[in-house]
Length: 256
Length: 284
Image: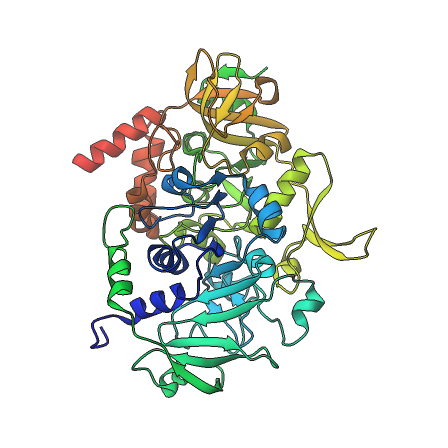
């Protein structure tokens, strides 16, 4: 708790959910993104179209799924398609507005690592791998990233580039032929970072209430720049908190 | 025409040590019973293929069945790491595991190419990532019409494709519905195939959104009711999410893992005894 009656994790979920406008077609990763996307659907964006990589299009789960393929996603979907179809026709075909991802590491250009910590051939920690993320970040019109703000996650140099944000800076996405705009916001438990229009470097644009720029810099592994104007985001409203806490996990526990 | 046989017969006849085997299922309809049968038979040196190796591949890897894994996401969905997979990659236990890694979109394109008898699949992907430097089966091709550079992935052509489905009829026609993943592509890309099913019915009534694999496109069909557990079979039983969460602690420790596998897989004769052993353990 921050002393204001909500946790930093709740603030992160609410700040991320606010980024999804009603009617947005959103390719959702499991975990933090799925929670925020379902919060958006429960509050200001009831028409938000959730797509999970299991091929469930327009899923309207009553509980937060544990996996991207829980039966409830299929039962409530507008359509269920195969994996080649979801990645080929729908994602690569350019039909998705927002990709919503998480990762183990992120760098200043919004590139993501979800593959290994340490050397690839002799890893300290073998992570699950890229899954859908590389092409989600390549082909969605924009990408939102959620992760906890720690120096271990916000690093100077990724151990492995699983997913490209802005590569090595301006022009990289065009050079690589990536059709989407790239990462437009990183929402953490402390703040929101957005890419600078000229340098593509992630900069501090909004602090969550009660957090200082120094707190954020202390949790970031590169010398973080701040935008000329840094906003302070609104604290979660009673409605937002109520809806978040009403989200239930698959087994009926409180998922908020 | 698919032969309707027992699961142990199907596995004994169609899967050999050293084969490339794909037991597919994208969260739904994962062929756990077939994987257990391979473990009981002491399969060795397999190249395992799957987009989302989860608990059944963790079990096969931990029991030393595999020397190589071709995959795109190896985790326990919503829970965390696959500890046996990590132990094999990080420490070579119980045997070293070579890996060949793609993205989901890349694996899907590689299966589609295999099913379509093409040498490779094409996609927009991989550019700017570190994957191609470590994955010889990912490369580049220039479009002959536009000159655009695209990713090429080598076709997947497993020796054996194994899936689980809701049901089949007596002629071995297989019907599955719900989240269908890449199961159709897996069967059609593979030289031989096994479909385990919840039940054999006299007639396959049409189901909304169903995938049908005609009996003449499948090598063997075996009845294995509950054979997807802890995954699920839409319309038959739900995903056992509690089990996936419990697996984290069971698999974290080598000794506990081996004791669990001995009791619930090696010392059970098939899916029925496996399920009974889980009930017995839960009520003990």
